[in-house]
Image (cartoon, rainbow, N blue to C red; front, side, top):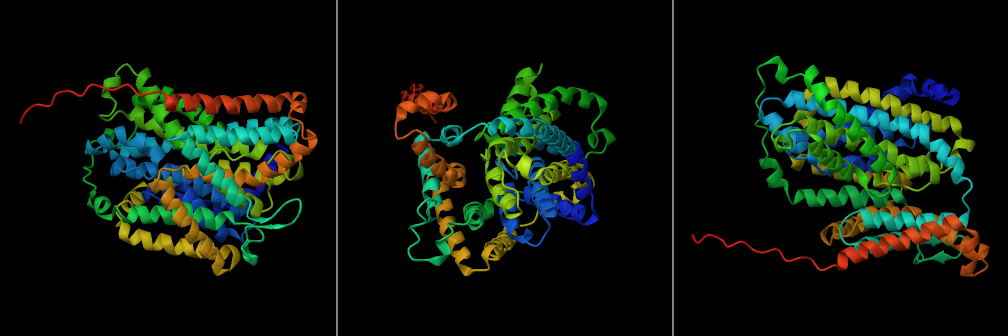
Length: 506
């Protein structure tokens, strides 16, 4: 608590507070614009924080991640087009409410639910991360190798789609992580004589290319369809259409509690993501309702359930990152680069080595939640207008920021080449339905996986039977094999053929 109070002292400094506010605002705008997302916003902005203090830089990036999750509900409600996939359930009841003249009501509930889910999840992070880190310090290289293998496998299993493709993507991520100087022999690997690759491939231009540039290329293909979307939203005439009544708060409270808990639990488990949380929360609220048939026609509980679960995922996904050094989501993997850049290496030792900087991060997260509430409440009308900006004006601006962000990271044109190379990989991964989530996380944990594997071989004296003295490692190895076997069994099970109904003769 002493360090947390010092953290608020650092964050509430005027200059730091301004940067956190800028981050939340940028995040809100990024969330409003369909197709960008929090990952893109953070990846593009990391190089721009080089000259900021660690507290201001990390506070700004955290603000972007938080603001984007809240802003994505704006287009979901007004245009039936979620700013991020995780806001898709919000469209089911948010857009019908808007068409009924209750857009302001839906937007306010989306904002309040987002802030509630985000704040409670941040408190859970503060309470759980440090105690889990104490146990993590007891984990040796053998246990760490098994945990990393399990994490990468479970992420591949839970990321959706084909398990084989997910594991292939994770394998390619680990493969690209081996580029550069080898950790033990200091021999160059796959550098092709290029000095720029001696230190390995930088995460920042890679993520910018795979997430931002590749997404913009895909969005450019749908310009006409997105521009045709018009905001035919009628404003309600009565005051009840623009506010949330006490009765509606009482109806939404169970959904808010349930959704926050679901989002926090999903965030702790690596690989699930915000989309899983929002759909689970929406489905649970619909099943618990006395009138489930009304969902999809403008039930405000649906908006509350989806948005609180969506925004509860980001803070809780940092728990495995802080406690074990393992990223549980794309945004956590991207934030690793920012943390390391500003002197905070994620993992259990950071609570001992830099407790004040950790407290600064916690204070910045809580402060960003309060700023997000203020900006969202007073700026809803302005942000709603951003949704009407033509995509043909957005794409060139984002591409310019991508190029600048990749260049600033090393002040070298080579980083732009790296960005373009991984743009191609990101584009192909989307077209061929390979998981770029598992690719990025495989790349991030690749060096630790390789190092712990080498150490494990030496500690076990090249004898697999010596694993019996490492029960924790055995447990995670069994869980890894079980996850692969169960998923493969489900994929190989023959699908039942559904009868095709006779079509009427025209």
